[in-house]
Length: 307
Ligand code: IPE
Ligand code: IPE
Ligand code: MG
Ligand code: MG
Ligand code: MG
Image 1 (tube, rainbow, N blue to C red):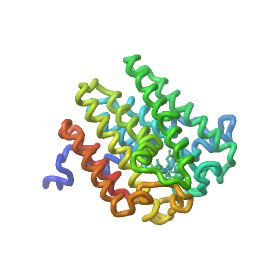
Image 2 (spheres, rainbow, N blue to C red):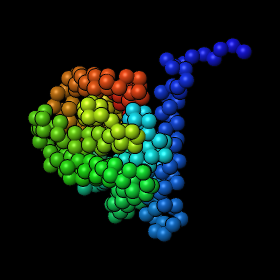
Image 3 (tube, rainbow, N blue to C red):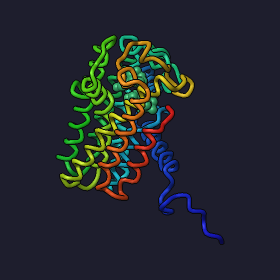
Image 4 (cartoon, protein in one colour):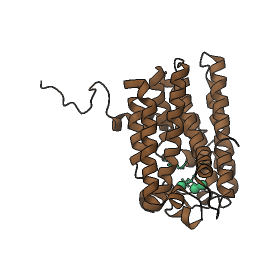
């Protein structure tokens, strides 16, 4: 028999594309299993929760959880719970972000937004319920180290609340029609999007063996840069990609007079900033060598993504 073709630097490892599909499928199955069935009372709310969370999205935050878990030899079962929790918070944030009182969007992940498909009150309750389910999952299993698990719950709570995602969304709404300076814009992005991405990375690492202080600091540096990079690219795609490719309405930021990196710096300098942030993120991973291969690949995916 002839030797198999080597498609990856390390032939024992799946390619990035295969690894990504594997994590996405595992996460999809975990969410489908852990969300209440659509037939369970109240059926309409449970169906809407499933509509908002299943069968869509790139699952970047779960991918980050799993990739960070490689640094600490984390068990897949724990990573699955942590990844599900972060993705449920993210899905809730999208449902609320699209509401008429926020960004007023009708398209998400290539489908009508939750409040369009159901109704506004249901969409509000979907957000509430996905958030509660996230914490229920994170607290469900005994991870064998109660203090660590409490730290994970606290970390996700802080990243989601008024000092994290919800706080960033509040600044976003207050900033409509205003010009923010770069530090102000960075703070808004670091909170509304960066906080949850940062939490995904740290949670993934916390699922395994403890990191040294130096390693934890390097990982946090990476996570902060990657989080900001993610929203800079989102700002760029909003004004360069089509609605069909994005699966959400293109050109919304300019139409809604939102301050973004593109409105502040222009497209070219926003692209340069994304390249700088990518380089800084990768530099922070140097310390981890081969163990950070998936995080390196994900950083490139986040930088080059088309939607
Ligand atoms: C969109 O996030 C909202 C932001 C925080 C920028 P994603 O681009 O990760 O959306 P999905 O989950 O893939 O749909
Ligand atoms: C949303 O930022 C960040 C969230 C916390 C959901 P955007 O408003 O730019 O996200 P999109 O472009 O609608 O996905
Ligand atoms: Mg928004
Ligand atoms: Mg929006
Ligand atoms: Mg956007």
